[in-house]
Length: 443
Ligand code: NDP
Ligand code: HSE
Figure 1 (cartoon, rainbow, N blue to C red):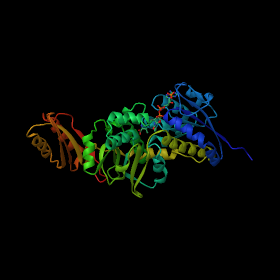
Figure 2 (spheres, rainbow, N blue to C red; figure 1 turned 180 degrees about the horizontal axis):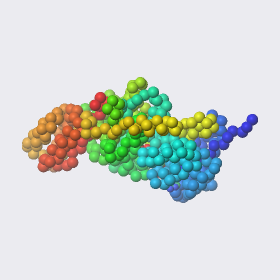
Figure 3 (cartoon, rainbow, N blue to C red; figure 1 turned 120 degrees about the vertical axis):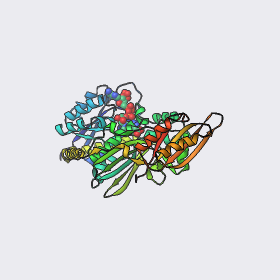
Figure 4 (spheres, protein in one colour; figure 1 turned 120 degrees about the horizontal axis):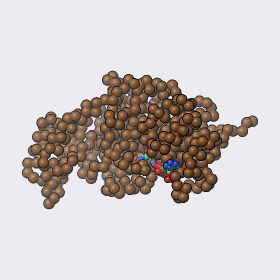
């Protein structure tokens, strides 16, 4: 009987995700090895700072400052890129792919910005690039899209894709925390990016939405053709309005596709979601994605979207797939044929006109506290034939100003932009209005 093959695994990065992967892979090593019929060798991890305290115990000789000691080691077959960023990570990923290795990545920024180059290297050198952990943490959305739901075309994919934003909005809404304190908490829990601006300004969610859009429709959405808004401007009055009218404030990623007209749109923005939608109940660090397929109907996946353990679960899932492929020869991940067919598909898709998207809107206006102010506001709405559905006024005694929150009936982005311009031109409107979309699967 021949002895089982030994598969070497190397990690680039031992931060929140890397430590989670090392911990759970060590704990499950024997079980996974016997299931896969191989020996697993957790060979080495590269870091920036050897003296940093880590939550996992790793022999000193297994940690290095030189990432090439991991990548170039002929006994490392699977390289996990868990350092983040797009410069060094790109260089290291391409190097591993050129050596024909399997790269398992959690790096959505890298994939979104350099996807075509990465997959060109995969096709040229015969390696693999697996990226389950790049979207929605522990939720296996990539595998679901690629495999379980392959029979479908999706006219709508809508999701909560950033755990940090969902944590912040939940803690502000349910526990009254300030934005700053809730963000600090998300950072301490390991949910936020090294640069949390990526989270709170919607860029991280855009990276993930763009990966899902590419998987579903074969087209990488250029950032300048997408709507990207974060959650910095959200305040207690917005959360209060949502609660009073059976809505929940969520940071959504929305990918719409019209198969007849040939367009797709990608938007990430804070939105008010009716409580009847499953996504309205996805809270805390959890992510949730509803995919509306022509065969399966609407299907929702939800679970922890960030943090070392949840993300390690996705990384280890990819490592196991990679090992199965290495030992059986049956390919996992996206094959050359699959990549080529996605490329063909993408050529028939154009980015849609965001101005034409229709939804009900919510606005928060800070107004001078003076007789006749409301009439001026209503005149602007009526000039552009935008109907108001609900209004709440908050008084701020002795401050000389008041707050009005209101919602509209469905209206196009273009028309709402005109209303906003009109409102901003009024001397009685004291601050930049806060504008949110009210999500409806039908519009
Ligand atoms: P961390 O900042 O916690 O960890 C980054 C790790 O990479 C650290 O161990 C750091 O070393 C190491 N590192 C950075 N640059 C280099 C370099 N040039 N050479 C060698 N090592 C380097 O990040 P996370 O673990 O949070 O995130 C890693 C990746 O996973 C990112 O792409 C992120 O977007 C993604 N991700 C993160 C999730 C999360 O919940 N945190 C969830 C899903 C994806 P040192 O420790 O010495 O500083
Ligand atoms: N910063 C990301 C988030 C990590 O909060 O969702 C998971 O991708």
